[in-house]
Every structure is written in structure tokens, then in C-alpha cells.
Length: 307
Ligand code: CP
Ligand code: NVA
Image (cartoon, rainbow, N blue to C red; front, side, top):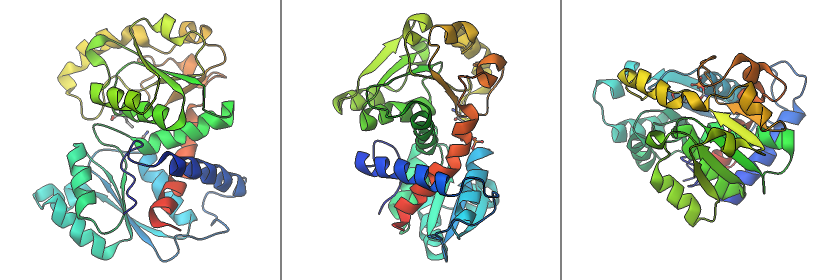
């Protein structure tokens, strides 16, 4: 079953083909109204369940719009309004939904929930973010970097801040696409060592740095994210902010990497992990990446369904 659960769980050649298809689909509908159908309607007759156990703006809207553009239909569900939120098992939810829909996208907490859903579903499952990873975001980010800089191979991406779920998917992408990746953040918030070890074992060049200025010199891509993720303990906010403050993406940092594209998966906390100048300046590819969620995920859904 072609589930899209993680970057590292998907064959690199398939990821490559998805990015190419995403770029082609984006170009083919340039200038059309958002609601205009694509020329091809590969999801005609298909229905996609979009399940959210955490809030979402981009994932929710981009999946819904993408399905509609490809001729399919969506059901947008929140965990709390399903029996899932009342204790029905993930496995039974998977079995039942598989009788109604053709594809399931879920945003959830523990990665084990995603895996259990996929294990018991007889239709493909897409990871719309867990506490551990966010592969759809990274597909859009990679599409955006290629638009700006051309081929990814041989480039160096630098992550600034918390070694979180989005960072983990970037590390997996470094192995799949052959670019170097530097994590720059506090020791206490380094990425999962198992993710780092797996990427290195797959041939990726992954560096761990604590000095932000040294990390970013000559970088091609600078990436940051919220200092407090949806799954993080709110009480840890002040401690995390103190640890992460030196890694803010701001004008001083950008001066050390003047050709780098700046990415943030959003939502951003302006003035915390990233300044207005960095978000809105010429190096920012932030809103292009937000748009590319739509195009990249359309290719992911086509891959899952083989259409
Ligand atoms: N970047 C991202 O996944 O945004 P949402 O939380 O709004 O879906
Ligand atoms: N790391 C963030 C990403 C949000 C899209 C979170 O998990 O909250």
C-alpha cells in the first residue's frame, strides 16, 4: 500500500517524480482561478478524508483545494467530533473509513497513531504532521528551493532553532536528495539522534552546530520554525525561548548567507524565531512554500492512488 508516512519511508526516485509532477501541475494551471479544475481530473470519483487532531490552516486548506482541483471530494474531520476522540480504536477507525473513502490524510500526535492507522487501513494514508515528522511540508519546501536555486544536490541547508518534527523530515530529505544539512540550535533541543543516525547511515552529511553564525556562513537555505510546537508543554515556553533566542533568523544572520532562501513552515511567531525583515525581505521564500503545499500534496495524493 503506497502510504506517504515519512520521507525516509518513501523511495527517493518516487519523491523525485512527485516533485517533478508538482512543478508540472503548478505550471499547467498558472493564472487560473484557484477553484478552476485542472485539465486532468485524476481524482474524479474519489473521496479523501482529512482528519485533524491538532489545529491547521495550510494543511487543511491546501489538501481540500488540491483534491477539488483534481476532481475529487473531501471530508474534513476533527478528531474530537469523531468516535476516535471518544475512545474508539485507531485500528477500527481505519477499518471503517477504508469502507467509505479512497484516501486518508491525518494530522495527529504520536507517530504510533499514524502507523496504526496505516497498518489497519486498506486505503493509502498520508501523514499530515505528527509530533515526530511533517513530510508534506518538506515536499513543498523542496519544490520551493528548486524553484529558487535549481537542483538540490550539493546544496547546504541550515536549520535554526528547535530540532523538532519539521527538522526531522528535513534531515530525512537530505539523505533522499543528496544535500548537506546543518542543525544549529541548543544542545538541549537537538534533533532525534535516531533520525540523524539513520540519515547518516543512508549517506547524508548531517552536521550539529551550536554557533549560529558559523553554521549559516555560505548556506543555500535557512530554515526555522516555531519555538513551541503544538505537542510541546506550554509551561516550557520561557525556558525554550531563552535557549532558542540566539538562533533567531534576522537581518544579522541573513547577512552571513546573503544568497540563501529563507523558509518557515508557518505559522510564524514574528519577533521570536524570525523577524519581519527576514519574513518579508527578498530572501524569503516563505509564502511560495506555503503555496507549494498545494502543488506538492497533489502529487503526493496522485502517487498514493496511482493516478
Ligand atoms: N505548515 C503547516 O503545516 O501549517 P498548518 O499547521 O496551518 O497546517
Ligand atoms: N513544529 C510545528 C509545525 C507546525 C506546522 C508544530 O508541530 O507545531
